[in-house]
Length: 352
Ligand SMILES: [Zn+2]
Image 1 (cartoon, rainbow, N blue to C red):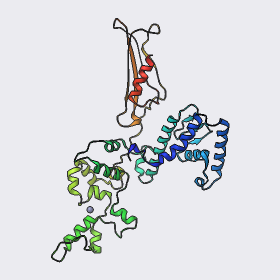
Image 2: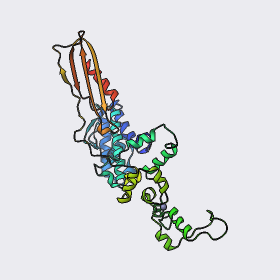
Image 3: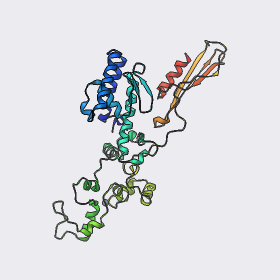
Image 4: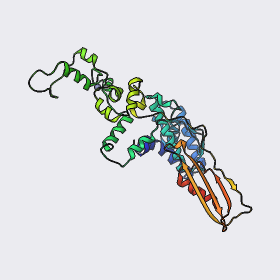
């Protein structure tokens, strides 16, 4: 879960076939006619096969199968329609742009698989996933002190990825006969049937619980471990937010990815979307062009921590030798600019 989630081999597995094909188109490795023939043959091959992946060979088939999996449509050798319905022309859209779209599609495909386990994550739109940005920030920070260091990062990675093996999960896997919290069960046994003998009980001595003790011990699942169990109460009192502890006591948090894995549902998309085209508006239109004077360009991109909220803008003003603003304009940078440096550069470009 490092590198903003791109460490998963799923990214390479999808990006390579589509990326290679995009590069081949872009750099004219083969004639359009022959690439078209390869894609046609692949589409026919894939349509026939039952066990389709077993039949996949050659770059055409790899392209077609990979596209099917991320819900893209292969219209022709150079035209692909993305999961968002956007038409990509591999002769006009550079491979780097295509790869960005593939990465986005793979991210969505992975989240859809996770939604099978945590359906709550899909309430504001399927495939959008959880609010991962704060987690990436925490995992990426270089700070290391007693409250946040590599051990904590490893713990967060494990919790978010659902790799915690609680007793209830151990039982589900068939590796144990009961699903009760071992610490709580042990405490019950220690209290009711202390070790008879001179020395203390050690890990070598078998501990046998009665059926009644098993019944009274709480189920050892994530919500028990994190929010309700007595076994980690001290740690919880010290580290957890008092409000959260109170809510977890009164509401059902069991099975909720936000409470058990730190995966909070993404808020709905903003009503007003990012502009799909760049714009140019005069604020002070000069009497004639070109204008002479000192140019002051500026660009800005505000996105907080989540990309879908990102909004960019640019402006410039031209001031003549007498200190009078003789021209000023503003607008929105094109959609492929997703950062403040790009918006600044676009402002400079517009002023030229
Ligand atoms: Zn417990």
